[in-house]
Image (cartoon, rainbow, N blue to C red; front, side, top):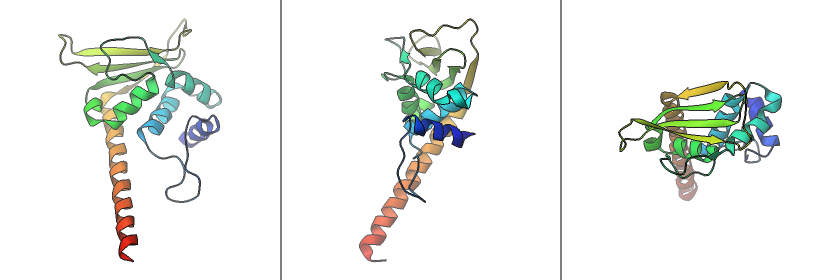
Amino acid sequence: ALYERQLSLLRAGLLEQVEGRGPGAGVRATPHSVAMLLIAAVATDNLADAAIWTDSIATAEPKAKRLRLTRASSFQEELAAILASEALANRIVQISMGRTSPFAEVQFLWPKLKRTTTVTRFEVAAAVSVVDVVATMRGETIRKIADSIAKLSDNRGAQQNYQAKSAGSGM
């Protein structure tokens, strides 16, 4: 099901891909692309609406001007920043997305305040639903995904260094 969502997002221009076949081709596992795939997987079960619904939630703007985890201008940017930073990922309590109204919430630790957590809500202006169905990812899940992205990035860098050294030494 994830591959079909990826294809839907590619067709809609929401993901970038490297042309070609084999290793190095296709959609790279970057914080931005993983954020978009997570939004697509969590926000809707309906594959037919995946691209439209994903785009609505991904581009949703933060409602708070203060007490935000990042200065991201959209939910996808916020989620990508979290996935790219171990320090930010470690502050996440949970991330929730609406399945009947296009919104997302990031609940995170804010140690400087008396309360332990703060929520940044991202929503589309006309987002009104009689009943909200919400899907939530716990902070531990976000941390594991961020760690996996970092390991992939480290491995990719090590492979590129090895290939550059091999090419330079005539191996």
